Amino acid sequence: MTLPIAPTMTRRSALAAALAAVAWRPAFAVEDANGAQADALHVLNRLAFGPTPGDLDRVTRMGTPAWIAEQLHPERLALPSFLVDQLATLRTPNETQRELVASYREMQKEAKEAKQAETASADGKKPGTEEGGERRKQIATIYLEAGEERLLQALNSPRQLEEVLVDFWFNHFNVYEGKGLVRVLTESYEREAIRPHVLGRFRAMLGATAKHPAMLFYLDNWLSVAPGYQPRRGGGAAKASGLNENYAREVMELHTLGVDGGYTQQDVTELARILTGWTMVPQQPRKRRFVNGQDAVASNHGDSIFGFDPARHDDGSKTWLGHSVAPGGQMEGEYALDVLARHPATAKHIATKLARRFVADDPSPALVARLTQRFLDTDGDLRAVMQSLVDSLEFRDPRPKKFKTPYQYVLSSVRATGITTTNVRPLMATLTQQGQPLYGCQTPDGWHDTEADWLNPNAITQRVNFATALASGRLPLQRVDFSDAPAGANGMTAMERQTDRAMNKDMAVEGSTPPVDAAALLATLGPAISDKTRAAVAGSPPPLRAALVLGSPDFMRR
Image (cartoon, rainbow, N blue to C red):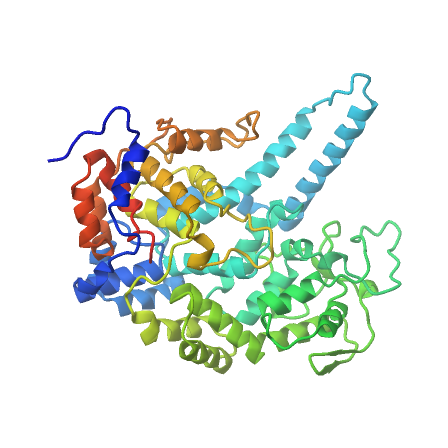
């Protein structure tokens, strides 16, 4: 018999009391599960964002090798029509890099003019303009649509491994959407420089990210010039600030060789010299030939605003990583990227990060060595490297060794419930509350992926709050929110305020979903939930049961 919740006891505090009865270390239910079902759960947790209703049975029937083979060739999997329709409503993917940059600069210009008018005004009040307000709404919409495009696909696409890898590789080549121009270019960056290459050649992705204006702006290479450079008057070229080493340092430390990759500060300076002249020219119509194939696919729209400016380039000889680099214009940089992409240290760095993401926080040296060799043998073929990873004995160990990041936790929670989600903006607000705002990592190393980074008391509290709101049907996941909804005095948008009410004040809001059925949720998750947790769920009041499943230590691991 279960007891009703006392009126003075909130749903959240009752859930916390129930969770206290469950050991924080999961009981590894998969060890005692049916072998085929345990295998299915394992690949769904590691190569996807967890199972949706029916996934366990479907993957068990087809067999995990067949499912993995599908995932390694996402182009063969058709997107469901409802997802295609949702994505078709987004305007940002149809805008060119040039149009996006023009919108942002117009907003900057209007803001500057408004500030000047405010200073000149007798009463010191800022005169608003309809055009300025509309421009700000457009910029806000671009950011929100980037999040919608990412999360709708992560939740609903059958190409789950592709979605997991988009998250992995965006973090690897991270840019921060809060830095100026990057705000309007993040969606373009992910769609053009990351997504097409996650199962392709590493060199192609390295080149696409290096040339994308989001990376050029984020790490300031667009400003880097040779000593003594004098900008042309009225030429519309990017301003200059001397030699800038930011990108040169990060492309070696984070993107390729790794911090222990054997380079020196002199190598950083020499690579920065090699990459001078790699800039962007948004004001000029595109009238240039491609230097190589990597450049040609830099933008799906064919409007890449990347440009090489010979006048800004340091055309002296360089000595870098033991190589003598003769003057060669843009081809110096292409050569440098070739060297980095094929370097053994790069292979080891990438192998280590992939093993850490898909196997364990501290992966075995033997696994890293095999993946390193596969990377080198295939010239950085990422599909081949992933095949080797999933074929490894280390990957096949079904024990849930990884603690979910907030991004993985939120997505796997919503997928497990089977809720049809038309509004992902509450999830964007939730990710911010849980400390991992989408596209919001300020540092170039991206979000980390280990238990030490995310397991702490405050994080667990935030997850329990989210689990309670989601399970009880209080999140507005089926509401259409508008980007021009006014912000309150605390700067929160209407959607953020609604999400805060749902999670922290036990209040249902417009567009809320039905409460989650705990029995159906347990069936979806199968052996992921241990007998001990199931007993705790069964002994809890019915309104708490689904939240207890989602807030359990079993579910927080993968």
